[in-house]
Length: 144
Ligand SMILES: [Zn+2]
Image (cartoon, rainbow, N blue to C red):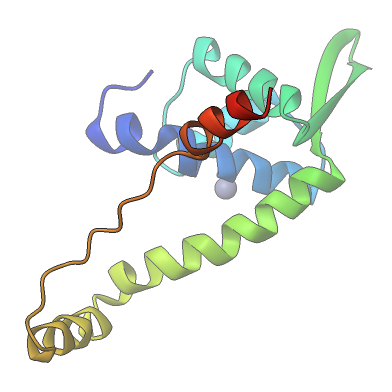
């Protein structure tokens, strides 16, 4: 694993999604993904890339197919239907969280903060509930 803080914190989200993105466009293979990630500024080892690909495959987000290219076996990965669905959902979620940072516009948050300050002071309500198991336990016992 690369030892820069951004990669360390975001690898499991952003890079994985980025791999899924390319695999949704067309079948891609390991060396190609590595080169693309380098282009984006992330140098990841095979010891990180392949477990990530296998994990995505195990989750059912991508599937692989081996092909022989120039006498060598090459594994191509492509997004499954489920993977494309995840990518579409992630796209919306990313947009929502990232747009504010990219545009550096936190006015909606500042407005939320102002409204909270204006709201009448009240103690946060603590709702006490017992877990259902505890509530139904004695009743069930009584029924016997
Ligand atoms: Zn890319």
